[in-house]
Length: 449
Image (cartoon, rainbow, N blue to C red):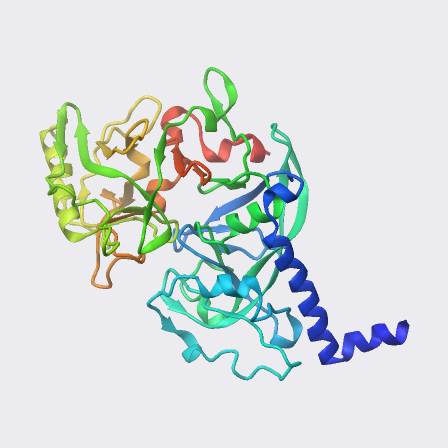
């Protein structure tokens, strides 16, 4: 037996067979439905915001190397050891068939897409390849599907944070060159889309804990059907998931994994001055034939980006609210790039909730229980003594998300906002800015210590 163990460690063919057995076991696990497995505890993982890129990472890998949080991402991917040292997925497997159905992005290949072409020859079976994408640079590569070891805390559904558990997911290997422009120390990307190989989808298949996940940027993420306890001034810690408004999630045929919401209009109001963005009917709708248009959420984009025609209408409405509001000493000042709308910064202070600034309202339709209002900290950015609106027009490179949406709602607008993605009901819960409610993501019971 000792000789056999020694052989398995040093014989390349035996190693490949061993890796194939391990990954096949993982594939079998992922193919099981929640109905055939015991319901396992929900998971909680801490997030962080990178000060240089204003993007968010999740420390869910077992070695704690962070992964960029990407709501639109269809895969989990990371840099990997050499091909001889990591497991692979057989190309004839069901998981490989799923990987081949992942969306084909328009992207520029690092290393010409040939990073793995010098793989050492193995046994007579093929390894499944995937195409990891860097959502910040738009670059991509070709790499093996493999097994990635993860680790996260569990919770029993009360205000108790349990010890970490280890688990494995199918992810793609990627070369180090694909990490360009990601937050410092990031080893890859954690895709959170509705696609089958995203992190939430794999965890649901493995753990049977409900098709839900939540984000509270920049503090934590939960996976599974679990309460989320945040403080309130009058009632102490309450489960916020039961008290926030919800809106339907829309499906875009050109970006089926993306999270789209039914925004019908945009307006700004301040001290009695209300101004609606003058948009043509249907300007924000999804074109059912081409998939263009619509309003999509993105954690891989620091600020909201609008199509030029939408931004012009929004900027005019916001200026109108500023100029005609009851505060007479406001004025527009030259903007600092990348911003377009900057003001003199002399906004009055509110008693408990920060600066007194216009409200930006996303007017929701299609069954939403309330409109989504953006308050001061969700869009204003201090720059050189001025206050700039963190909502930008589309640049020459186009929109930062596939499908040519009308608006991409970025991280600044999603921050300090409990977002509950209920994929069973296809709805999104949104708390809006928690600091206005004298609460906050960082004051969650889970991570209060």
